[in-house]
Amino acid sequence: METALVEFVARVQKMMDEALGEYSPKVITEVGPKYVRVVRHDGEEPFVSEHSAYCFVEKETGNIYKPKGYKGPEKNHVRGNILDDRGGMGWLGPYGIACLR
Image (tube, rainbow, N blue to C red):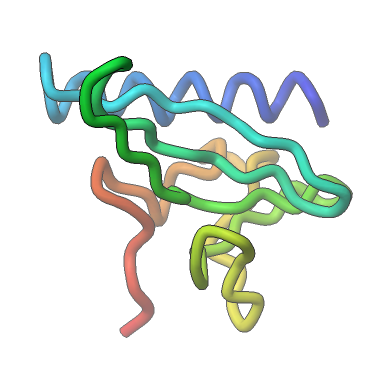
């Protein structure tokens, strides 16, 4: 699962780099007890630096959730899985996870 998560984060970073070019944020992870928070980190230190939760990945299953806020996911609907045939990228875009319609 750890390797799949590293590959998922690399795919997210590549997608953002291709879509946003020189303005692409850095993608980092923060590991919690149940979820891994995938964070988009905009700006550079010591200048203005902003960060926001891009998505949450459930450590046990690899399920991807849209953020409810910075602290946790919206748990009503799974938006993908890092182990699926698309590597979890089906619902993702450079600005965040697609909304359900």
